[in-house]
Amino acid sequence: MSSTPPRHGITYIMWRGMLRRCYDTENKDYPFYGGRGIVVHPPWKASFVTFADELAADIGERPDGGQMDRIDNARGYEPGNIRWTTSKVNNNNRRDNKVITFRGKTMTAAQWADEVGIPRQQIANRQNRGWSVERTLTEPPEEVLDGELTALAVTPRNRRLLRNTALMR
Image (cartoon, rainbow, N blue to C red):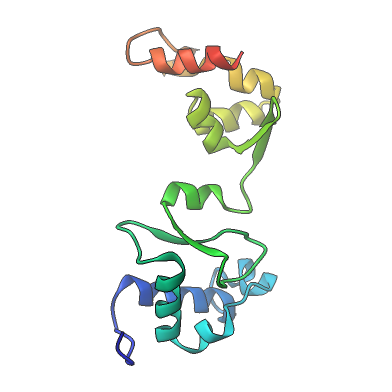
């Protein structure tokens, strides 16, 4: 790698963003990073080249569409706590996610949505209406037809959703 950081490139943009979140008190995300004590590994903070070289050595080159994620959100940007991941996984690793425990398994609402075939927003709405976790995750999905909320019709398109909810019962 050259000794001069490139002016463009996703890795450089990620590095600058990481520094801004952790050290720029004017950054909108500072309260959630630097304001909570999240810091950048000192050699990475001091040098983009070191950051890029160590990142590539530790977790490999960034895959297409990959996002950098801290594995443990209570720890900083440091070796062993960084991974490449997808947007979906990264969003499930947010500390402000609501988690739901059902039958000994704890997952985010988005993960439960994938598991049982009920839209994530519908899970959130059910919880907000005071439904029990069991009812929330086992009652078939609802859909709106002509402004009225009804149970999801059994069609080939919806069969997987209904099968998944039935399996959870």
